[in-house]
Length: 376
Ligand SMILES: [Zn+2]
Image (cartoon, rainbow, N blue to C red; front, side, top):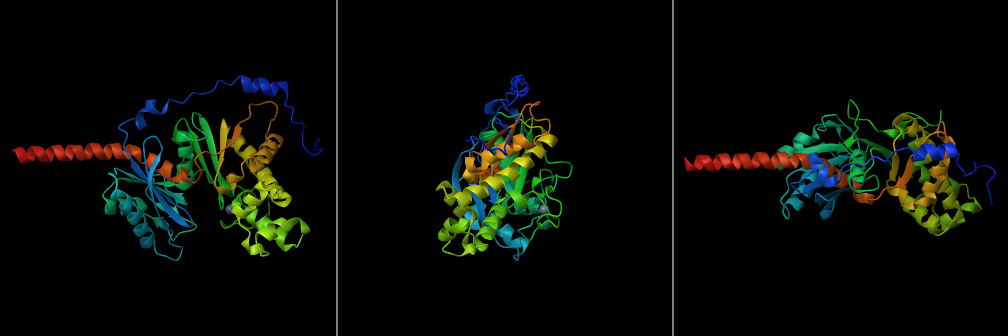
């Protein structure tokens, strides 16, 4: 049965030809990428999320060899407390592994030198010189990265974006995080805060956003948007929301993202519809991003992407319907992220690897000098 409101799925011959004429870019194999090639040092990645600090020892192949985690100190706690938590979790791993560098992925604006967190909405950091503070205490090289950039890097290196020349990653969590990887480098912008797609305005005078504006994309296509819509539906006392309310034991306040996700996978029509709505906004936003970046592939990650095709199929449909010059240009693929919750810490750890090599070289030089002095 065809839906009279959607465009036919048949694409024009011209679009097909345009798609065919593109030579696929072949990124160097992992072992050929000189800046990241052997020695295969292990590093630690720390992902600071809204609720937990997750750390892991990551091999040069992107495997998480060991893990440790702590609760994230809330916004009321001083930056010192967050620092202590990071140091504590890394030291726990350092007891079991020989670590050469630490990468920290933080949800916030990180400066271009990757040293300070300019602003973090969920933590007390305001212009916090995190890199030097942690590095001094651990006596290890440290790099600070925006969490979405770290996940984008991980997806490019080891995940769904592997082998892509131009990649855009969109993470649907509480809000929307984004990352851009072009020619094997994270694009951070002049001041380090590029890729904040979540705050592009998509609806004039729309929903209020934490950032101070109205109608931001993340108010329509994030986990928060999904839960807000589901709760509103449940509170409207609509029979449509029956299934959702039963799962939440009659309390709309108990409806969460994972609950909606589980309901949709079980075939609850209202939940499927909610994902279709979020997916359609996702597709519209991605079509806008295609205007700006024209990447070969969009990787969609974050908790909401657990819904898989329930989210991505409507997103692709809306993307095709909204893309400028549709039918006359090659279309980017839209795929689900491959690394799940690990992307942030794997990416942060891998971005610290070049530092680890330098650190090890410096330490060897120092040791040789010491030996020579001992001999004379
Ligand atoms: Zn906003």
